[in-house]
Length: 130
Picture 1: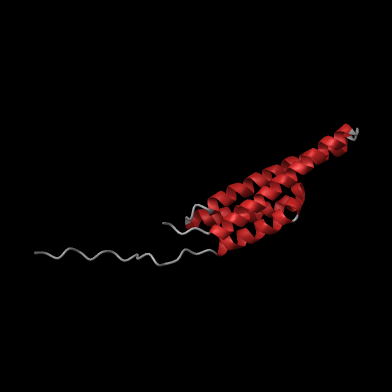
Picture 2: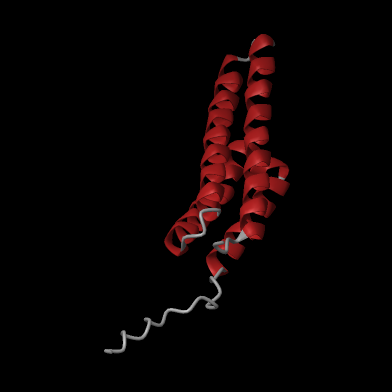
């Protein structure tokens, strides 16, 4: 059974979900502002909501990469989570701040994760001639 950075995955996934929810709140606010007749305000909020949704989706994608357990994918996923958790401040208010915080911690855990070296990398001994 392969070792995986479970804590980094869980924190990044939950952070991505909060960021996604933050984007949904911005989009809902855009709808409410549009109903009240503030066209430009609704457009700005809708743009921020879409950007927040994109940040949330890409943060969740990074979390899935972290869960792969492959060292390169874990690193790339952690970088993706880090970038889009930080960018989520623009479009989703950091996922109510908790999404930003969980994504940041999950990304740091993913970047510092190293698989254990308990598996032997030594080659088997050559066969002994009869």
